[in-house]
Length: 141
Image 1 (tube, helix red, strand yellow):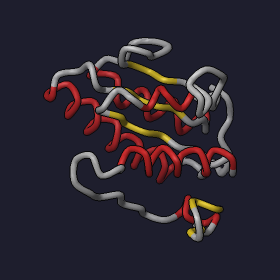
Image 2: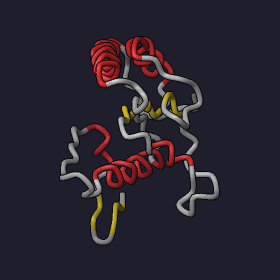
Image 3: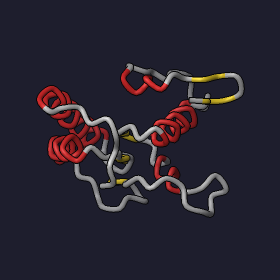
Image 4: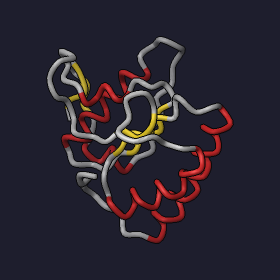
């Protein structure tokens, strides 16, 4: 997968642990959204817990006017439906069973709500992924 000028990523990156680190304003979100776009093109399931409220922009074309990726967004100011702090486990089970990609925008939650959602989501996702056969391609939600 061509990530940028002279920089390519192997297609099996979807099975690897990847970290994106940097200072505030250094391009972490841009890098992560670009990686999301590339993996989406490879039909890899992706789930993002987004605290910044900007990931919904993936649904817009680069010019900001046309259609971008067809990816559901839960929560935030631009979400398809609201996201509540106590729904983390339910969302995790649903996404494992459905195999679809999704943006989970927790940006409008309190810090306590974000932690509760993320903790419940991560614990349930881990347990369900251990039990379920991994889905290698995303499906529409």
